[in-house]
Amino acid sequence: MEPDAEFSQAEYATAARAVVDDVLARGKLPILVGGTPLYLKTLLRGMFEGPPADWDLRKRLEEEAAGQEPGWLQKKLAAVDPAAAEKLHANDARRLIRALEVFELTGVPISEHQKHFEHVRTEAKGRVFVIDWPRERMMLRINARVDQMIAAGLVDEVDRLQATGGGLGRTARQALGYREVLEHLAGRINHKQMVDAAKTHTRQFAKRQLTWFRSLGECTFVSIFGDFDARKVAQRIYGGLWMRRKSLKL
Image (cartoon, rainbow, N blue to C red; front, side):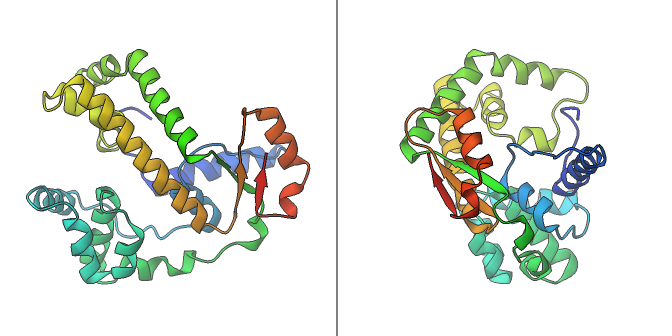
């Protein structure tokens, strides 16, 4: 995908399933690593695709939210779809706007559309593993990762991509790290504020993702203590301990 391209949840599901089918057709077992629980849930249970994006409507909602107090989008969604509003974080503007968009375009809350996909697929239980770091250690790893990205030239990368070809599309501009760098390049925050914001937003995102993972019954949490040994983790999982418990402590 080019940096100026849009990439939706539905497009991800189509692309990922094509790869999975190809691997299976060759008699191999596909292993998916990384990604967000929203996209994982799409692969496990399918998704409500809903109406196509209405960019004019999204722009209007974004502009209205910009002039309101924090949490306005969530309150607006709660008025028409309290179930969806309860599941979404107040800062998750993209998904809040999508939920409002679906309601405006279909007249039916997105939570109603999605009910069909809320059931755990029992055949998938025990086949999804979440590396569960101690909270403090995870936060330190996030901070170190952001520092590494900046040191490796993230600011120059974003600046260069903005100036070439089609620039950055909506999907790329919303990515963690990119959006903070864009704020810095626009002169709205200084370098330190950029780094601090990227760390804070990534830590907040990680906490929300863990909540999502815990809501998926297919997931087995693999708790990590001490030094991380990838081979040991893989061996314990492969050894079948996950069949007897919903959490592994390594």
